[in-house]
Image 1 (cartoon, rainbow, N blue to C red):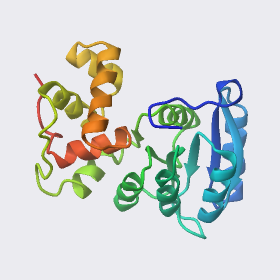
Image 2 (cartoon, rainbow, N blue to C red):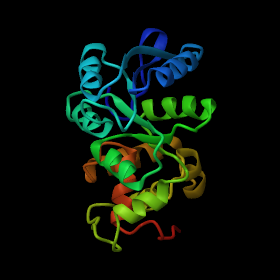
Image 3 (cartoon, one colour):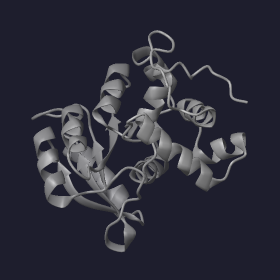
Image 4 (cartoon, rainbow, N blue to C red):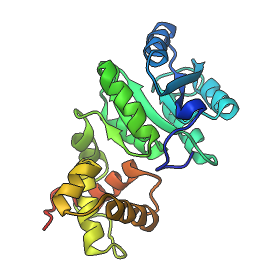
Length: 227
């Protein structure tokens, strides 16, 4: 499934692979997902290597990925998954609120990052958001993490091909605004916004919205105002 498309399976369900080395945690999450309409668990993995193998076998729409696992950690597994053709989306779910983990996960191609103390409702929302091609980061880490690790100095990336309007869109994406919030701020339609985002993905050679956020911080847009 390519970025920007919604997950599909039987009945249009988001097909999920659970990757975590704690069987009890996997069982708890599986119970939650099995009881939730629109989500289907297709496999469970306890190591990084097993995650990659099962993803190739079952072709999930989304992998719910732990960071610390034996047999290749979750970030290494994420990089392997996202490097292949038609990669699944990856939502990292971890105990550790560590900036380096988040940054490495995003660079590896993860589309979202949440802590394990998140609420069930937020986890379900995150699965649907990330499977649909958008990025989602735990509120506690978003700007702190990317500002610290991606943009140690301002404006380290130039945006010569980006139009003024696209720059405004990228600025608001960098700040973490949702599509609906960007539409309201710029007074544009959903279709127009999707066109701008599509062009930004191509121009910035970005895999998904998470990488657009990184590009925005690299260009020093976090503190830039929009008209």
